[in-house]
Image (cartoon, rainbow, N blue to C red; front, side):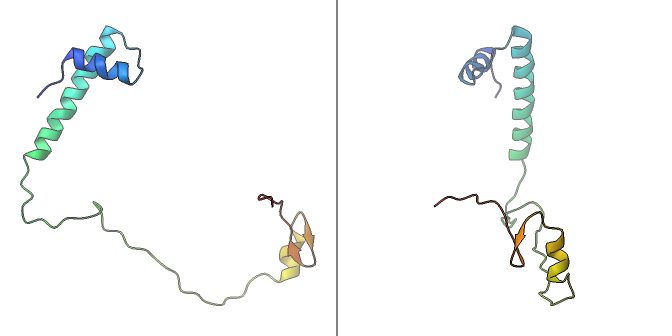
Length: 96
């Protein structure tokens, strides 16, 4: 199956693309090459292959929750632009 120039012009019009004739011809060859790749993929036999959600196996890596030494409150608050009663003050982003 190949895409005609009229079909390329129609799709370009739907996408509101203003293409000149050289761009239409270039796009036609690129789309036909893409359809050729899809035809190659369709020719593969995948019978007996289990379905996968992703091409690569993915697993989450979780760190264990451990209590570790950290900054003391007064050291952390010392670098804050605004603080009050030992707490960080941040601008309100959600109004009532």
